[in-house]
Amino acid sequence: MKLSTSFSLLAALIPYALAQSPEWGQCGGIGWTGATTCVAGTVCTVLNPYYSQCLPGSASSTPTVPTSTPTVPSSTPSTPSSTPAQPAPSGTGLHSLAKAAGKLYFGTATDNGELTDQAYTAILDNINEFGQITPANSMKWDATEPTQGQFTFAGGDQIANLAKTNGQLLRGHNCVWYNQLPSWVSNGKFTAAQLTDIVQTHCSTLVSHYKGQVLLTVAYMLTTMFDSQDAWDVINEPFNDDGTWRSDVFYNTLGTQFVPIALQAARAADPNAKLYINDYNIEQSGAKATAMLNLVKQLKADGIPIDGVGFQCHFIVGEVPGTFQQVLEQFTALGVEVAITELDIRMTLPATQASLQQQQKDYQTVVQACMNVEGCVGITVWDFTDKYSWVPSTFSGQGEACPWDQNLQKKPAYTGITTALSA
Image (cartoon, rainbow, N blue to C red):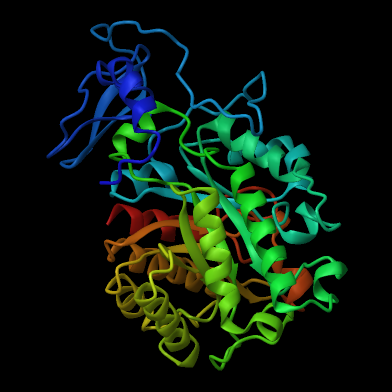
């Protein structure tokens, strides 16, 4: 249990929250010691022996409570004045199933240009399906500090405010990456001291701007036992596929020290955030996974803050690594949590019935691996629909990588996910 600096605020708000659980809050289960009644308009529903949840519905015995929910004060992005209409959740969506199974969330990436698509946002905003959002691009360096010392957060704030309105968790992505850098960074001829200051300034400014932008409701804090749920991909893709360090402005100037420099700056900016290193092709045993394991071991030995490792999981149909669960367990054995952060499973086009069926099996396999590992906290798909997938523009002749199709209809892959979440 982590008692953060927000404990005093929570203590003041607990009397309001303990009497009843809010919509989507926990209201029972083996070991549950919190509120067992729900706010008006919801019913405490047993989802499994360990988890009961306040789901939409009517219950005459449920007393009425104030409709406003206390929020953590923040000078950062403000909550929009109106909340988008949401479809009535059924309690069997991806996030609801993940929560019922003991995971923190099931989420999705999104991007700002997609938010004008009302049919798309009707699904994105449905917390029954998605309890977490990752901005795909609007928090990256080129978007947030295009000119040295001049920060812009408009794109990131739009998605942060959306998550806040919907009651969804927000994952910060990312602080330091070799790609999508403004030219003043990538082409800079810096001394080690200069680049250290640049990295520290960027990380601390970015992370502090979004500090506290997650878990704004008391009920969510209480049902997660005060754990910090804000997460940042502080370091993104530091390794080549052979396990060597990438040659970029950070490594070439600072060596491996750019990693602790960034992590320490992020920790100072938000002591409650979970700090991650995020990469792809570490899902199978091999040189790259070994390099990441060794990095985590070294960071922990040196007392550098590292809380988790993100597994991107950009897979190809029929090629999900058989050692994935084993690798997840190797990392959790080091005392860090893990998460699936960018899941999609692409196929050669055009899609066939056989490839769609294999994709269903592959999604089930990947999600089941996370479900089988206690320290795997959640799963994020790299957008949920083929309509906005990055795959076709990056991998020629490939696509159909997401659980929803181009027309925003669920594919067999969706059933593969729900099967694993319900197992």
